[in-house]
Image (cartoon, rainbow, N blue to C red; front, side, top):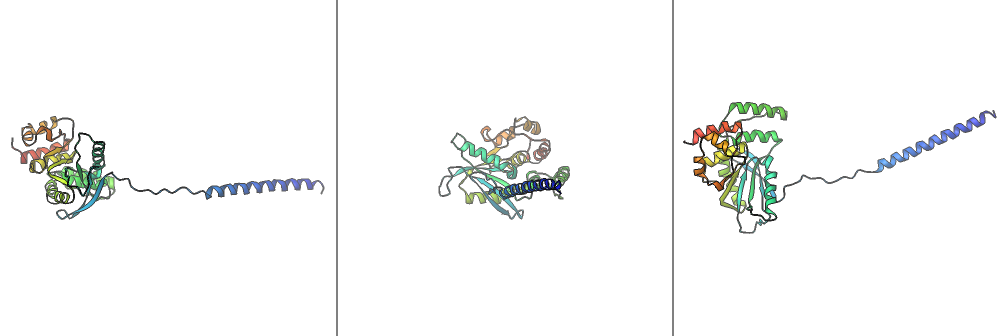
Length: 272
């Protein structure tokens, strides 16, 4: 019995130490759990000096998202008017264009202060934007374009997409009869200094609009590297230069699909 007593004492000491260790670990874990991760209030970033409005088109029976970037010197109560630039593909490119205008506008440079109007759509995803830009920015229907674009967008979105090219005439009518009057009634924009800007299909639409209504826009911003592609497609630049002075446009570039579309425009609207 005497021999067992020291062993019992040792066992009690070991058990006591284990209990202390367990209590310590549990207390530490409770302390860690008690610390809360800070919660920050988050919101979507916005483009500086920009307003967004939903414009319902009676022509399309569809809502368009119109984004309007204002110069830093713009005041609603002022009578000063600003040149206006209408830009296609606003869902994708408007923040870049608006911020370029913002950077060039402050501090003041030789770059003119302009109101930038981006034409966009209410979309679930960029697949919707791509389908509608194909519809609105192309002057003629090209079945192969519809098929290839529809298959690609359906695969990307996981939805059955509808793509119908060839709606540029209707989209141009929307700009002329609904968008421009809306902008000119709500903002101090010039009615004689309008620019139309776009890239890729947007550039194609710009060409279409300029040839259909050369009196509507006095400037075109269709960015690219050289003018060679325009000459390659049309065979000459005489007609283009007869419409616009060299100071009124940027050089033009067309992708392969744009070349196919522009050949159709040339054959339908231009005489060489």
